[in-house]
Length: 203
Length: 167
Image (cartoon, rainbow over all chains, first blue to last red; front, side, top):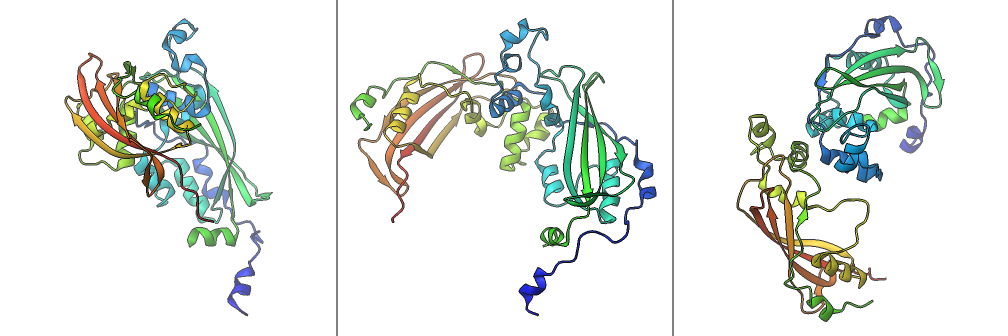
């Protein structure tokens, strides 16, 4: 058999038997991480950049005079921008996405992911997100984040991506006074990626 | 539309009005800049954490960047000249030289303003390796919130027509 033919023959991705041991991850369900501070204060320049990129001309985000007359009494950050304030800096982003070395490995959700990956469910795709805004975020605020592991599927789902389990994460965002400003949920499908996909990632 | 050099010559030597930077000098923009340039020495993040309230001087052009959106009609002499060149087909831009002089530190939280003067442009169309175009010489002066000049810069840009690839 020549090499091209050999490469074209791929094993089926669906496992013959269930490989996911729920009892190994049960203890993480409902567990929360420590609070993690954002890298910067909420700044008017970051708000402006976001509004320009998304072409959002709402004056309560960028026009101080108009914002003063609004019911918020001053400039607020776009609520949808909440995750911006907890993004990685460049160093962490490179570690996370290039070197597969994410920060805060001791956080329950990161321990959970490591175990799920090791069980062969190493693919990941975001499937749903919700955000509930509780209080306005204003320039000068510092936003910190805590991630709680929500529900994890107890049975395999047969999806077009492959066999997988849903994992819900609950993000809580709070300001410097400890007031919650946003609660968000993020649902990912952790799935058994095909051999073809794994070969790409493993080089 | 062809480039009307005699009309454009009227803009030479004219300084713009005072333009305000769109944002205050902020720690987050300094962090982004340092990260992109890998500027760890001097590490402004560590300096800021230690209480230093100044921005990297080389970053000064950042505070004078125009907004991404909405589009703005040209009102100042240098904007009009660049627009004339755009309209005449010299719509590609390359920064080719920058001389910076720093006179005073730029403070975090300060909102800068700046003026731009058109110091001159090429006498005729120049043939460069990037294509045919005009070199425009712009002189920037930056002021801090109290109106004191913090930096002067000489910026040369090449406005050029992208060369057509040989068939």
